[in-house]
Image (tube, rainbow, N blue to C red):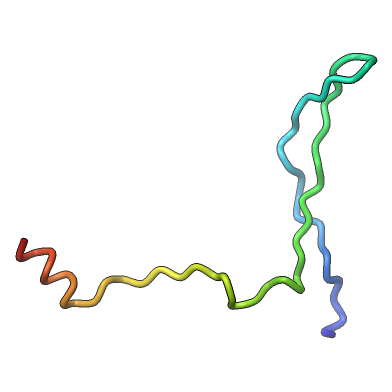
Length: 60
């Protein structure tokens, strides 16, 4: 909806060796980022503990 591509290339994945009939071949995959999947749901947030939680830890 904003005029940008939904799927964008985001570098290369780590290279690895695959064994085939002609021998081992080095391959790497393209990393792809989906801009449409960026939502707040499932996002992990870390918050500092509240002052009372810190006081409880200190009193132990």
